[in-house]
Image (cartoon, rainbow, N blue to C red; front, side, top):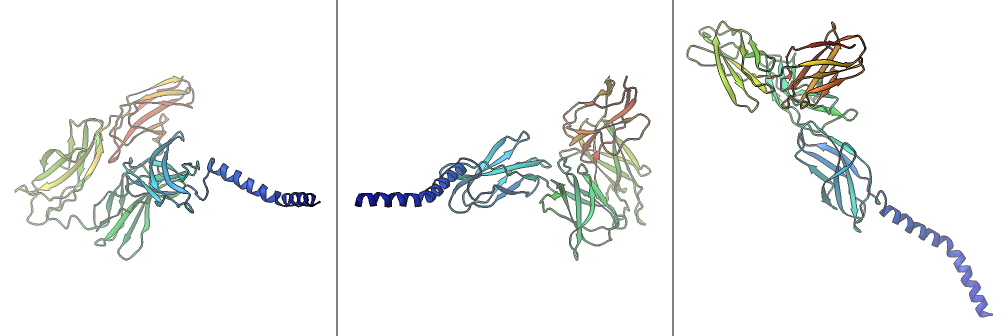
Length: 409
């Protein structure tokens, strides 16, 4: 009888424990699936990727709760969505610096946690960062204007220029194309100190994180020098081997006589290649024998009879490029455009439009400067087209005038 009663009690106790056993079994199964799946407990993956400058991006993540993590692995996400391991961080670290980057390029990252049991989660949380350096210089042009310089980036939607005076916060002064490398600010106050920065906008309106600024004070250049010379005015390449430079005549102070102008030709490595002197009555100069596909800078200074110069550093840059060489229709709706490759350029811009029309403000295509041809598609049969190819260098788009017209059958 006692045995029967014990058996009944055991059965009753088992029935009462069935829900609890089910819960324990379910929790074990769930924990096992998490450790072998995605994600590991209490880790959300990468939180942000912020550029420090043009060559370094810092990737952030939130530390895992508890003592689950043994380390974190940081991956770059390639264009085909495959992953490349960049490095790892200790379980107590919450950021990783990706260095040696190409300025102006967009990068994507994934951060994954490795558990104490050597299991790695597989979260797909991607964060983006743009390696952008920001403003690189400012050249005062007059008492109310300055030329700002900054790098171009094909990965941004636009560049924003912010400036402030000593008594104000940063405010938006201009928004320019991401392929611009220079912008003139006008209407400034003479003698007032300004501080400016340039931000690249990408990823649906997000701005890069560079903090670089430059400071300048607009002032009347002519009145500050007895030579009364404002420096070089414009520079433009003529094809791929020459350039035209001009300047406004000097207006020297009483007692100072201008004997001529000295032109400094500077190569892309920053070294002065050649120096040319021209008479005082001259206001332009043609530089010849330039190397194709190179960036050049030019400075013009006035000098007196004792060969003293005004010493200004105002530089204008050009890129030597010949432009389009041929354009041939392949059929009624396509054509091939040929041109020289220009590895030293930032990119090449192709402009094609109906013959007799004007050059559009937006390029038909922007391609790698290492390419030498481009396929036009979706053309209209029996139509004539004109094409030009421009190289984007330190001074903006080159000034070659080459154009070729062709017709589709």
